[in-house]
Each structure stands twice: as C-alpha cells, then as structure tokens.
Image 1 (cartoon, rainbow, N blue to C red):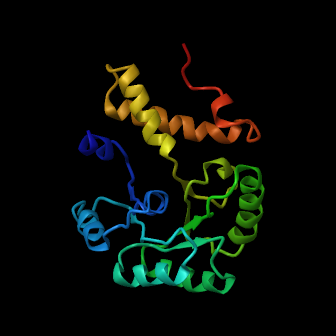
Image 2 (cartoon, rainbow, N blue to C red):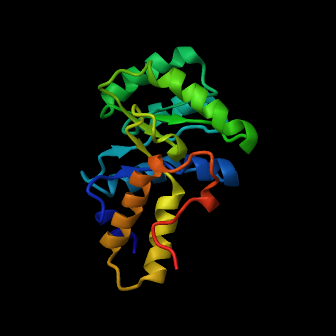
Image 3 (cartoon, one colour):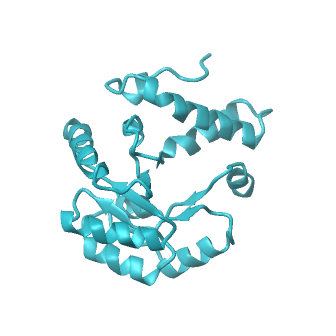
Length: 200
C-alpha cells in the first residue's frame, strides 16, 4: 500500500520520524534514514533533517551536518539567535524550513504555540517554504505554507477500510479536502467534536 500511497501525491515531503523517536525513546538510524530518502530518487520535493524534539538544538545541528540533504527545523526551545543560521541553511537545502513546538500540556500548548508562531513567522523571509510540524490547528496563519498531521494517514486508512471501492488516490484527495477546509472550522472545538467530511 505504501508504494501506491506516496505515488498518489502531486508533491511529497519525507518526514524523519523525529516525533516518533521522541515519544518511543527509540533512536533513528541516520544512515538508514539517508538510504531510505535516497531510495525515492528525485521524487520528494523536500526531505526533513533529523531534529531533536527533546530540546537539544546542538544535537539537531550535528544531525543536519551528518545528513546535508535534510532541511532544518526551528523549535520553540531553540535559542532565538539560531533562527538566522537555520534560514541560511534552508536556502542551501531547497528553501524549506520546519517549525516545531515541543509537546506540552494541552491547557497551555495552543496559546504558547500561537504566540511563538506569530512572533517567529514574521522573521522568516518570504522566499522560504515554512512547514509546520503537527501545527494543523494553526493553518489559518497565512505564512505557514504547509503542515503535517498523522490525521492525514489515519483518515486515508479509515476511508480505505470503510469505502474499499475508493482508489488510493481518491482517499488521498478526501484527506486533502479535509485539511483544506479545516481553517474554516472552529479552532476552539476539540478535534473529536469537529464535523466530519462524511458521516453515517
């Protein structure tokens, strides 16, 4: 299914799996990740560098040095003076820059993320493609050019299981439509109470 799934997209960004590594405590083998990214040949529009979500920006910089193909990510836990260096690095790596917010308690997370994002986005030059890691709830900020969310794949799988007559491409299209419409939804309503594209 994976080979059909990724070919369904017009554009493709490869994710390093840093969040999964952070949550599980299982380290990512950077050499294996580089080999996997190379197996896609020229297809991906962007390949994410392996950042350290735990807050160790020095480790992130080491990883970016070891895997020069991956674009960097700036985190809310990184020192502010690091941003210009990461912008310069992103210009050498396809003009992509990731933004990430360290996971926090739900009560404080959204307000903190919103404030930090607005302060950060105005500092990033317009020629840089800004990708928000797990920042779908802030997609209404026009300077966020793209965001990711595991809900894309979950919804793809749900629709494929529920409507097996749909092609993989059609399931991806539905996922995209759901994300495109999400800025129009009430951002103060929890995800599990948001209206679904389909309902029984």
